[in-house]
Length: 342
Ligand SMILES: Nc1ncnc2c1ncn2[C@@H]1O[C@H](COP(=O)(O)OP(=O)(O)O)[C@@H](O)[C@H]1O
Ligand SMILES: [Mg+2]
Image (tube, rainbow, N blue to C red; front, side):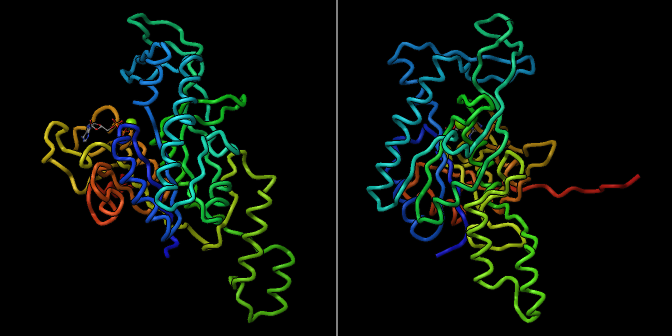
């Protein structure tokens, strides 16, 4: 058994490898806490085509392009994620002995997001004001409900959409969900001694405040009564019975349909075992499209204190086991040099 939490993100393009991925995930979940985050762009496209809902992309003046999540697409997204991709993963994980619980970011407000406001973008070759795009950026992750599930030996299977401020679904990037979930699960609030506990500690100076009964009290109080004055992010809830004074070890594995990060995306032999990212750079790889999104998410996770971030091949016979044993690309944060010099 391990205390370390493993957050795995699995791209929708890996549906042909669902069985082997879930087999590995179930084996890992028998050893320690595992959270699965999934996307499903390919399944969304497929369902939209079946339902006759046209899929369009919008591009911003800065050149970035994204799915135009109009109201009809948002409906299809919910159906694809919660009705197709997730049940298939839940079924496969169950077949391999895990106890998965499917949820979108909306459930229990685990992932909250800010919807993009009205903005100018290019749609169908014309620059126009877009007002009904239901996509956005993650505002916060509340790790409390995930911790409750993990503490109960369950395996959360999480996907977009997130919950918007108006209580409506918001389409957010699944790599970003995985990064934010990993970061949030690693944060452990320092608990100042409660007056009663402090009194007890002062009365018995030999007592170690981190003894198991005290930790269990704190754990119970935290997971059942989130701090009311805490930020709406809920980032302060849950202790999961672990280190009171620091960060809990979390590793993030982004499984995708590539051997890892390639220096040259056209050359499968150009795998980079390590890649340094920094505030200003995503490293030496020529990354495009979906890989750029992954590296941005990886950088965010590292900034949030996630111990290990790996981009690895989901098409292998034992994708997670191999990723944790050194396959794929380890993303690292470049040290900041020369700060404060004149
Ligand atoms: N430098 C690179 N190394 C590896 N893959 C890359 C790179 N640049 C672009 N890609 C592309 O990014 C894809 C991964 O992103 P994406 O298609 O969004 O997958 P997922 O569904 O796993 O999120 C790869 O399959 C590959 O086609
Ligand atoms: Mg992607």
